[in-house]
Image: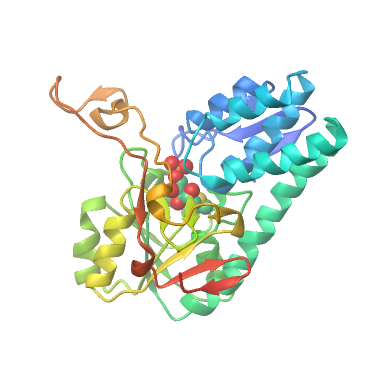
Amino acid sequence: MWFTLKYDKGTLILLDQRKLPQREIYVKCRKLSEVAKAIKEMVVRGAPAIGVSAAYGVVIGALEGKGLNFILKTLKSTRPTAVNLFWALERMKNVWEKTDGSIEELEIEARKIEEEDLNACKNIGKFGFELLKDKKRIMTICNAGALATSGYGTALGVIRACKEKGIRQEVFALETRPFLQGARLTAWELSKDKISTTILCDGMAGWAMKNLKIEAVITGADRIAKNGDTANKIGTYSLAVLAKHHNIPFYVAAPWSTIDLNISKGDEIPIEERDVKEVLFFQGKRITPSGVLARNPAFDVTPYYLITKIITDRGYYEP
Ligand code: MRU
């Protein structure tokens, strides 16, 4: 059985998400620098999985004899948007300071973060089931599944919970350019679970809402501000606008650790801009004339008033 991440005696083993679905290979990180590189280069991705990996990164850094400040700085500089990274590092920092960097205690805390995330996903599934059980045709973007968490997933966790209760749904997954989390990752994990999936190019979302009777949209989140504004994969904002126009409920599913109460509204969320090569090239081949410009924001912010409900592990709420 495949897994997203596993820690074993000083090694963090990650399923290489850059290679899916063609190849299922695992990357072994035995150094802090390797964990940081794996997060930055998206071997592991998805807000909760980034947080859990960073927690194990602290343990690995401690085993190498690195100092706390260096470890935190290294891991914090990987990806700026997902607050779960900073949340997990804060927990690890507290344990380090209380126990003088005890490896045993750091390992216990990292495992706790991992287990809590899995439980949070199961609870999100339980609450989300109440909202989505009557919806048969569901749209999603990016990958907010088992690959993005300790397992089970947030948005896809809700779909899994529905399946476990015998509800058959059709998932319409947007391909999610440029990294193709939808086409490669969501499709991969849903097909492993035999959940019917149709891939749409990103530009087909409005057409599909109008013509394919989409009944709900559900996405994950990378950071939710105090007022409910939500950062998620680029394209989520457009989807929410389209959903409003077509009168389709728009749900965000995320663990409590994704809520950032230090940020009052979405404008304050740092948005990662990645290398434009990801847009200008496809699988190593340039797809645009040389010399043209590109932008590559990895996330956008959906304002709270476009979100029908935020489904968390503690229940669901209006933003
Ligand atoms: O750039 P990524 O692949 O890390 O972006 C992931 C997303 O936007 C997810 O929707 C989000 O992190 C939630 S994952 C449960």
